[in-house]
Image 1 (cartoon, rainbow, N blue to C red):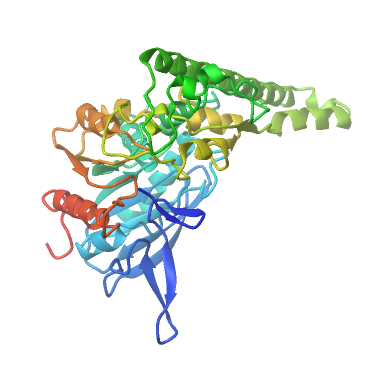
Image 2: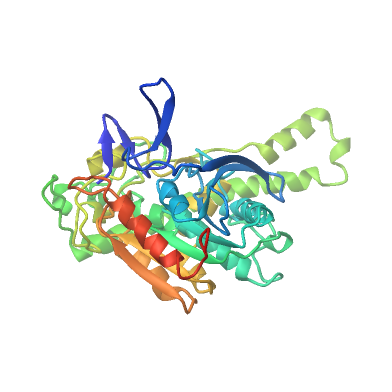
Length: 442
């Protein structure tokens, strides 16, 4: 289960804590345990990159010298600049690049198509630094992002996407997308859109009212099979069929709002491009310009309502009943933050819409011919077993491996040491890397 500290949760284990040593100096240790420290002699290089479309991203490159293979951690919005696996990979003789994308800390306007330019900039930088091989390690939301990148880079120029999910021009054929040499999926989602769809609460009857609720579609209604944890809920097949259909219907309604917003801006941009625009009175020009650029934010309430959270017979694994961001699933669904909460229309369609996103890890895997390692955690509450196994089954690579590790989504375990899953997943990755990608000194 996640490690709860007061009202806060350590989610991915990325990030460092500065502890005062007896000498008064700060000693940086990774979340989880003082046992996980950077090896002596590790150099950290702060990196700032500019993508081909002009956007900036950042990261930290870790190396001790002599490394020829770099492992890259990415996530659409999370800070992976100091991922919990970094010390282990550096110790094993690999360079590590911990990425921070242009949407660091906030995916309100995140468009996955644009993120590919950030990953491309990382690969070009690492090649220029002398790394002969680059392996993408997509953790959680980074899994579908990394697979989307590799599928796009493997697609011949001229056949790549030309539009974002919102239908706006963003031609991947015009970007330099260097191919990566391998893919590690670490508890990656099918897509953020698919994860959002699975958790979208269909009982919301009014998108403006966070308390609106249709009891017939409320997974927390005892009449529908809900039981208060730690008792396990049991939903009927009939209820689940209605529930999933209602989730799609709600997504369709949100998509329609988003597309209307996109079309309003597009229509007014077209007016600005008309020959007579400059001759219009200034107040009319101002009105058209504002309609062309202003964004009405979509507020999406209650986005943590997957029945699998409380009915453990759905895609069974060893998970317990626990919310994704709070211990109680119901509290997690009805409070902030949820998965989405606020998005631009363009960001919603590209990232969190299960119907409109152009990201699908299982479909994208069919274009990944490089070596693939897919890792699942056996007690993961967030990413259920079919996702990791589906990547393995769909990958086009002739060299693919599936591994299951004991632990929750963050590699934590119920028994002590709580962080025991971290060295185990590190070993699985290093054992997979060694026969395929040279480490320093080899």
